[in-house]
Amino acid sequence: MKNKLLVLFNLHLSILFISFGLFVSKGSSLISHEMWLDTTTFQQSVGKDIQISLKNGQMFQGAGLSYFKSRFSDFYYISNEQKIEIESRMGDTPAATISLNTNGLLTGVYVSKKSTITYKTIDKFANFVSEKGEDWVIQKHGELKFPKNNFKEEYYRFSKILIGVGDASGSDKNVGLKHELVALTNPYIISSSDKFFVQLLFNNEPQKNRQITIFERDIENKVNIRTTLTNSNGIGKFEVTEGHDYLLDNVILELNDNSEDNVFWKSYWAALTFRASNDPQ
Image (cartoon, rainbow, N blue to C red; front, side, top):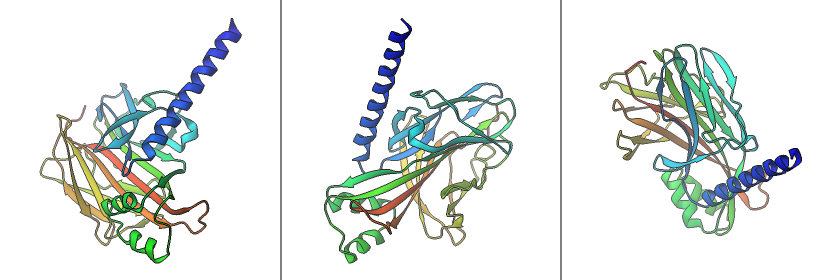
């Protein structure tokens, strides 16, 4: 009986892995799919459960991904200066359920492992880089006489989420990611007249004149998109509406110096999610 249960468990786990792989493969063929951390409760009382979901999709709407260690290099949260690794069961959706017994701003962090996408035509690639403000890439692609069909790009995701626990006191910080959006404003201690400030870093260096895409989701789940450019210190600013959720996104592309198997480009995606609110729990 024990052996039968073990076989059934392993079969179930294998199906989960296969299903996840098929989903990622299908999603990776679509251009400009964001990956972000989301939650049903951006503000939570001390001691209550907080769920963190891994989301993949477009327009700040997408499917939840399951917890699989093989897909990420880091998954943790920071609260009151303490870094806590997130450990869930394989296949869990949402990917994490945690609880904090102290007030403060929680920063969740997820860093993916390398993934690869194949572009069958140059058009989809051109649309993608243009949307993300990286138009120089297409010119360079032509100058270097890279193929216009069936070439590849490898990409990495660096996602953060800010969740207010109790009074939500504290601030986001640079946690040392290769590509990172750092909130300079605590979104849970903000009035509707305030502007939100965020800094974009790459290799710990401020990124000037870079496009940050802002996805704004209202209480009816309608999403609007706008962009802002960073200043000489890598800082972007924009207005927020109390009660709305925000996904900030930036993509940086680099030439792949050791191109093999038609992988000519690397892209790095930074994402930051939060809710604008001044309603401590």
